[in-house]
Image (cartoon, rainbow, N blue to C red):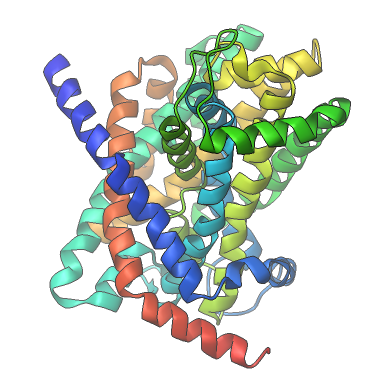
Length: 446
């Protein structure tokens, strides 16, 4: 096992190395330039479409609003709490700056993914609308590129059981055990039952739950973070200056912080940013393909808000709290660092805020990724595979809650990168389609 783990670790270092980070950032920058920065100056338009999208009679399975909430349910997870903290712990405050940069160009990536997902979606035997990278590769590129769609579906289905299931269940179990002394097995069983109750209803039930739970948990976490920032209002300008400074200069060892080079800030900021908002991985467009919409572009403007909300709002809250409280130099990492920061600002309460936030974020990720994995499996084996997949997904929850997952985390993280490769290639090859649809759509709204 040590040999296998070592080999996968070497593969992980390659697929998440400089070339991959450059490819993800480069694709996002290319799309942003090709779109003439539309995702940035049309943010307000996207929010208007989101609000109108709470109700829609167009062709599709779920409202555009709930499509975004479903994609957010998968992206808003441990990355927003533990991932941000890990980036700062390893790369210093400057990692936040590169996380922001990743999010800005990631908005263009997420937009393009959703546009193509709706443009090339299909209807399955049960009458459900299905789409995502495997479908825009198959229907958009066709011919000798089809194998890339199959590769994406395989990587996505397998990665889901790690990053979207067992890892999330383990995070919830660990948080509840450390904060409330609840046994991991009990947590795993209860979560499995709750997940089963939701999965019975398919995408419509998942979307309904996400449409209620995601706004509640996001707003609650934002408010808690804003309270901390309000209590440290005078330290915010200095914190922002520190973030910008160490994005371009090394940070020396201080307190429990071991110090970090600029490359570490870039590497961990970009990697954790991608882990959090999933722009480029190809997961979110699977949810947006099910939206009730007659316009790929309109759904794209809604989809790009996912990256804005996830990273530029939620991750920024976590990162700023860690920096303004000074917790970043404590030597802690992961969720413990976030908990330490909130506890410093809100003694006796802050730790509970992080623990409960982690529980809700991880649970919704479990639901969102169940749909992603299901659609990948359906693409490979047809609709008959849906029920067996759901059963396996539910069984995996208590296993993840009680197991040691270092190896599974490594495998899942590697598979995430392998998912991104065919998706990014498809985005680059199909970018002319995205640019034309966008120009035609906004030409009428100039």
